[in-house]
Image (cartoon, rainbow, N blue to C red):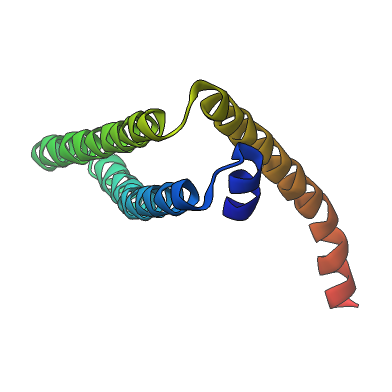
Length: 136
């Protein structure tokens, strides 16, 4: 992906190195935030189940509801951090790339995600056939 993007943006070597470093740092931060997001979603699920299980005991239910609210706030706060990271990265790119390159970057991202979704759709469509063959 990165090599294709550098090619599309027509970046000179020095700029390509700087761009790659920033993009790698951004991806690392996003991976960490998304990992935390997944953990927080698991906690939300856990607390929601506990809350649903304790509806008969009002005191326990209220306590679980407060815990669920705390987890929800942590989840929403982390979502905000993901958005902040995206904005931080795009601001850095605006300082690095010209307007034409930024437009190409946005279009590349859109097209890449579209192709990725398309590939995943085809994989899911082909998956049942593969599973059927395994059983035979």
